[in-house]
Amino acid sequence: KLRASAFAELNETVLATVYGPEHAALVQRWHGHRLLAVDSSLLRLPKSDALGEKFGWVQCANHHGPQERYPQGRVSVLYDVLNQLALDPRLAASTVAETELAHEHLAHVQPGDVLLNDRGYTGYRWLVAVRATGAHFVSRASRGSFAAVQQLFTRAAADVSVVVTLTAPKEVRAECRARGWPLALLVRLVTVRLSSGELEVLATSLLDEVAYPNAALSAAYW
Image (cartoon, rainbow, N blue to C red; front, side, top):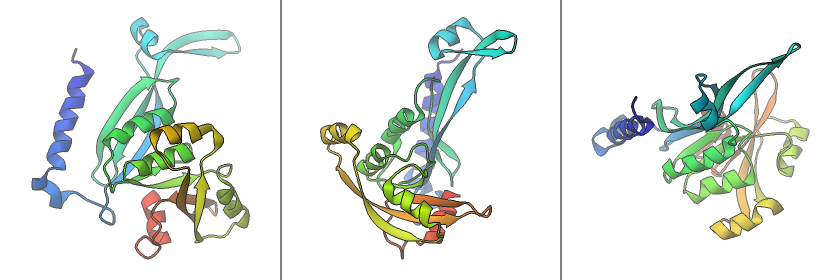
């Protein structure tokens, strides 16, 4: 019967200790950066009317028709992958988009951090929002995303690194102007061949190929 805020405050105390100056030498970093990741998952919650009202219900069904229902939430976590710490965990209704929760996580991101994320997040709005915090991104891109990404999938060559300019799509331009975000963004695209033979394209704001070679980005995203 503890408030959820109690656990949040305990976690903040842990983070303040770990990242404090007295432990700075113990904090693991990647090329001098904190290496963070964000992802979400759906979570089946204990069956109660109060939780169903708060988070929403999922109705099960089979060939006999509707069956039991249960509350379902979405848990999203901003995580320090090298030091194995949750910087900002959030639990919301399952109808809340994972991308919206990811934007809320950005309040806990520091300049110089590097964020890893899967293809479900890799849109212009997310990339430009990360850069607005002073952080960087290494993001897996989907085949149906930016035109430059589609061209690399068609090319189907591994270990390619190109710097391209992405432009804000029409549906986010008004928000970009309101927030002071740029309408164009320099992004480096890197192709990676997985052990399965599948080709992946990573989008990153780390443009220096010498300081951040392709192999290092591939290893970081792994």
